[in-house]
Image (cartoon, rainbow, N blue to C red; front, side, top):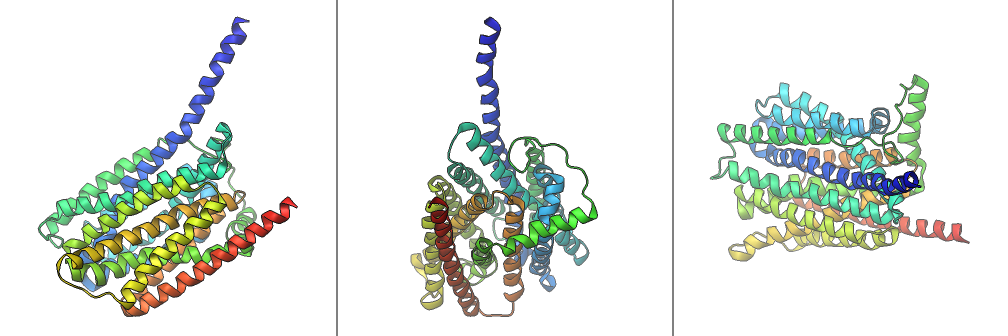
Amino acid sequence: MDSVDSREEEAPLVVGNSLKNHTRDVHILSCAFLLIFLAYGAAQNLQSTVNTEHNLGTTSLGILYVSFTFFSLFASTTVRMLGSKNALVLGTTGYWLYVAANLKPSWYSMVPAALYLGFAASIIWVGEGTYLTSTARSHAKDYQLHEGTIIGKFNGEFWGMFASHQFVGNMISLAVLRDGKEGSTGGTTLLFVVFLGSMTVGTILMCFLHKRDDDGRGEGPPKPPPTLFASVVSLWDLVIAPLLDKRMLLIIPLIAYSGLQQAFVWAEFTKYIVEPALGVSGVGGSMAVYGAFDAICSLAAGRFTSGLSSITVITPCGLIVQAVVLLWILLNYSVTSGVLGYMYPLLMAAMLGIGDAVFNTQLNALLGILFRHDTEGAFAQLKVWQSASIAVVFFLSPHITLQAMLILMLAALCVAMAGFLFLTLHVERAFSSSES
């Protein structure tokens, strides 16, 4: 009897430790991404002002996102072979190398680093979506909680932490490059060294994640190397097959718009709205405001996400907020002096951050809920279309006017809204049919 009692007393401790590991892994993953992307995000924002010779900075970003798009086609297969944890750790190396290339920027250092970062980014983001979703499923199963609620909560925490990288990274940039020293070699060298240190700590943190298999059951069995035929079949299943799913086709316009709006903030908003009103030194401050509202609203949106019904309400709110900003700039905005001239760009940055928070949390939650049997393929599609649309903006930006870009954005927003509404009707109809 004593032995039976002792086993019964010990059982909850084992389960408790297992449960604790789920939230622990989410904390580690969130902190690691914050440390890596506060460095990369700030470095990306500086490319158009630091590496100006022959547009090296912006061209390297365009090359990066073309590479990102291409490798995202194969990222789901790569992540399935490596495992999501190994993909996360390997993915960090591309960001480290790209920031290191900025210490000695040239076409021979930046372009190869951008090409490799495209590969690294593809696997780190598919790995992130797969790992976070599997962790949420494990947590929901062990605690006997609603899966959609936990997926929303975990995505809210992750994207809240991730979005704060804009605030933290730009504050570091402002501190190191104060007094308008963006172009000084000594200042930027020190800044990139600080960024490399932050990325190194983030990479080390990734190593402390627990391994998980695709279903979130913890550490899975080792995967044998696939044959050539198996690799081709896997590539079809994970890349082409999702495009035959009506639900994915209806989500793709929203995914593409989410990429367009991110690139619009980086390439157009800071150049045409922020800099004329606040100066070059105000770019970091506006992006900090953008990141702060992005982080706060990511946490809030994650808390309110409990399933498809809540996603159906929250997502249009983000689209409407961004539509207001785009129409404001297109129809009525002009640079003014005084307090309002200073406040308007910051208010726009805050509203754009709110929209970005909604798209990040809701898209990741939606894909995790709808495509539970093809998680890697769904998140690979997310990054293929996001990165392709980002590359389009970077390459179009030097050749079209701000008004033309705004019209393109509004058209994409309308298509995204229509696709999302049709998706909700399709899912509701399928759900009603399954119940009857």
